[in-house]
Image (cartoon, rainbow, N blue to C red; front, side, top):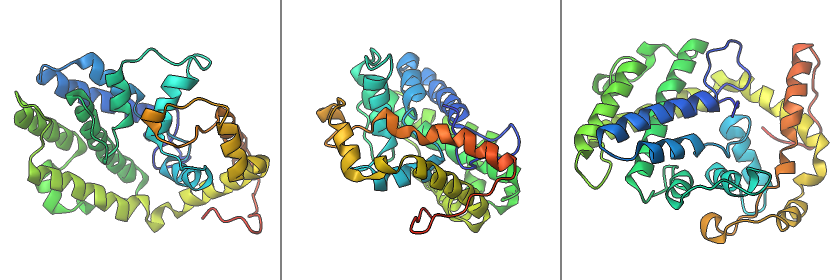
Length: 287
């Protein structure tokens, strides 16, 4: 779970990781579930498992795996594989259908069957939008005043105030309703901030150094695992591992051994710390 969110190898101990993100999602989701008299245990189980399938290097890593693996790679499906087929030496965890459904459908286009799953889905966005703003401010990429006033006037002028406002809005609109509801103008403001982050943080020139770190690391890792980059060989390996047709569709399982590049991550970062330089390999284009 110790995988970075936006900044790949930041200096400092206070940048978010997948672990701290998961904790924040669980905290927000449980608060909403408690106020709505829903199952806190189910909500927390979904929240704790929703990002288990994420790759290193954030969404950049997922994007590259999606291009490499036959049938594509989606972290929510991999999260289900982790809890059903990888944990406990392949035996999987004894989770309920509602937990699996919430994990599988936590992404924006998903449609969880339970209210608890819907809570985690919106809590995920509330958490990452606000803590990614925090990290961007901490890194010097943004200042609080840089955020669009049209959105901060609605949601609040700090991450704490925004999270508090969003939670209360969802509780107020969803109480004794058969759905999890957020006011239209509030949802537009939240998604407006999300779009602002995409344009000014996630895909901005400010993170070019971070992307370069990722590219160098992947180039080295790729050299060590060249045979597994071939689509046919990955599909062949996947044929020998179980996957649930009704849950993950026709996508082959990504073998756990495919994530050997993770081992290289520590070595590569250590080499960076010692000043070793990685030269691009001709014909390889990760960036």
